[in-house]
Length: 376
Image (cartoon, rainbow, N blue to C red; front, side):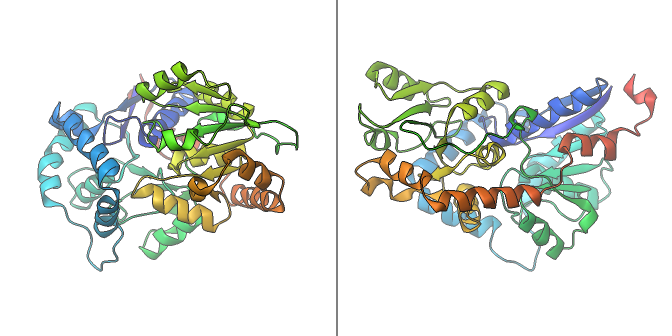
């Protein structure tokens, strides 16, 4: 078997895992001899302590979001003439990562998180490993922590990211502007919603079901002109509360793991009310759905929002608390010329992307020529 090692970071359900699983499924569909191993770096090294780190992360973004946002920007976005350095991280995970590589002997390593990318970049520069490594970015920007110098190929979600990497010395042929990878099930584009008396919307808080849900949903009356699916993610308490309320305009849904089921859900709705997680935004763009951003987590989502909002690809809906009705404001936008401009911007965005499937590019560049004896 030809082994491909995928490296996300935390065990929390996230875009890092969804992109890794999408690419793994794509590679297996191309060649059954490809074996995909997804190993979450923290838990494989720290065991149960990873759960403590995950809980700390969630508490920070929930209870001290401004402090987290400032710390995030200073640590990975602040301009610096020196490359980033995290000696404790290198000491803690460097040897462990080399052991994983020796044990699995992968033909390729795919990083969907910056921390493994940073560490592998250092190991390759030092000559301690010689395995090809690719970065697959799950947000719409490049920050300082991502490895760049020795990474073989960068798969980026936005043309501006290519320019940023080139400024950092990455050659053009090592950058592929694919968009953030989504499952092939999302490839069918929906038509623009036609004007009608009743719309259907999707409210999403991401896979963790985070958000100011109670206040947001209180803006939806029993006689509201829009029916809403509410994607609760792994927030089981939220799901049970909504089921118990039996609101005539709200249909709560648990976490949907099936890409085909999620794609079908997008096809049923006319717009999406969500946070700006990278993979969620990529799915909305792929499905050509008007996307209204009502809130965001500190850090990555703030930057995703600003970039795509400036591009005219999403709508800023953070003022929803001051509105007497969410739905009336959204319907007004769906009837306005602003929607036409947004859909045109989406078309421009898609035209700027490489038409090549990311999994196929990975296979052709790194795996197709692997000696047949390694595939037996």
